Length: 213
Image (cartoon, rainbow, N blue to C red; front, side):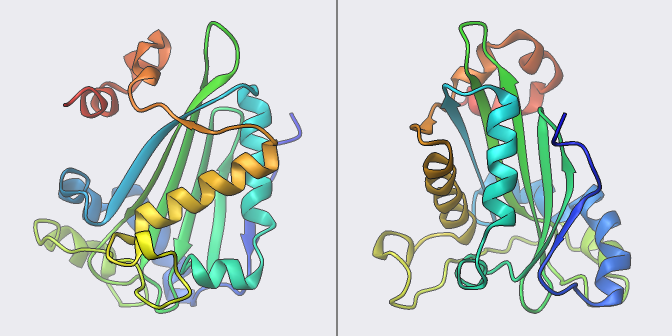
């Protein structure tokens, strides 16, 4: 119950144009239509935890709201809005410094044996930043164009991520922060979530992807 409330805004707001255009681009996410199958501008994982969905969701929101300016800079999300937060889902719009819009989606389901499973997905929503007039419509036209979101290569980033993808780096950092907040392991469990009937029935596409070899 304590998760209910108005969406949270963190750090300085994006430009007015980005603020106006971002809800539509987030809803459509044309950059994710094909990008999710290429894996170069999106990353998702399924995590298993002993805590309840309510506890995990609340902890995840706290992790985001407690990010320092330095941590936000390292994750390349100087601005973000938590636009949905409940026991079953947390959805976040994030902007880079030049206002490319990336979305973070965190969905949770309780398991029959106790604890919960969650899918964390971070993905680029479009080829062009939302600071550009007409970006949502232009990004629909550009949706077939493949593009990557590479991780920064500077020495301040862990060496294992420097030649990889930004979204994977973000997900792995959030996983570690969540484990520290919960004071329990957050275990990668990529297939288990699709054994939970209610989740599998309402998330057929996600489960189909998880079950691929």
